[in-house]
Length: 460
Image 1: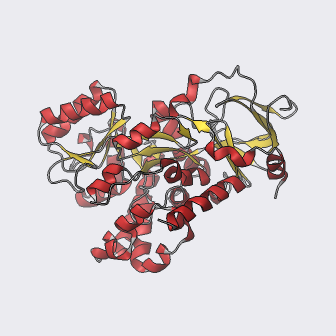
Image 2: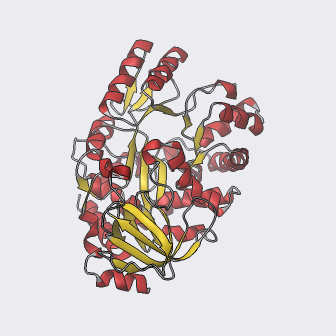
Image 3: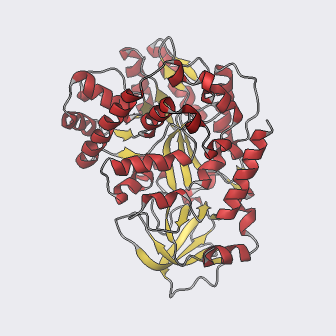
């Protein structure tokens, strides 16, 4: 155990941290850096992610939920309420998974499961254990929205999208989707969701052109992004939504229309679109088809809510197995995805890391590290890979604008790891500690809480 953890445990406070009060509404600029220093990490190597650089032997001072300063460690943190040593460690902004789904009452109802109360602190905690301090929920519902806005224990920051806006028939039954069959219904739905406080509009593929146009216009009037599945189009210049939720849909478009990826990049640049990667979906699907039992027995699946495992993850309900899909299809699609990632990254199309967590075998938190490894395999540099999960989401989404880099005034969402991620992306997978809104969680505290969650699920 390094001297950081010894010092941290010695404070007598590190192990209680998972249950300290926090609220998404209180993050960001609502706290002043003029507050007294509450935590200092000394002698740490900081990777601020504002550019590709490492600041060695730094002290990061935190005041409440914000970073107060980052300065050479000659300026000691002894006047802070808590001081821990980061010697031998690297500090960087917390990671963000920009495409996840969450178990909700609407999810249970759509799948005809018994209605049950979801402990969202338990459901979301695995993200923190893997260093993920921000998530974007791509299929929202009223209960997760209410939880986001409530007083609750420490969780990742959340952007919550609407239920999926779909044409008829929907891919998944209502209420996890909301069927729109007229422009008037589309306008009413967008305004209702905007009034309720959702952060963006989520769309499926099968909207009519008239309904899609109404969704886009109403969302723009309410200053909301429209993100989701690519509408069927043969022309990249006709893309009108802000975000593409799956790069594999762009890969299929390239194949179907025999498009030059450079032409597709031109279209995405013209619409100022951002693209979520979700590469791990293809990798996971192929692995399940080749050896389902081994893939389903990975230890991290213990931390997945039983309702979800019963929904799609058991052998008899696995959609890939049910369709007898060919793993070679997913292998080939992944290769197209990786090539497209290289092209889009080189052309400057914003890429954000996302996993589609909760579809079969995409484990919350853990799967983001699979995604980052695939981005590196695609040819991105380690700094570019890290950017997709830190600075780029902060640049795109105003609600995350106070995150993504380490600098004074930013939210104190920080991970501490034992190796340099600019040389070894895999070092991110097991953080020595995670700081969320200024609250520090030691590795031992993370593991203890995760084991408690797994045991509670085993009893259900």
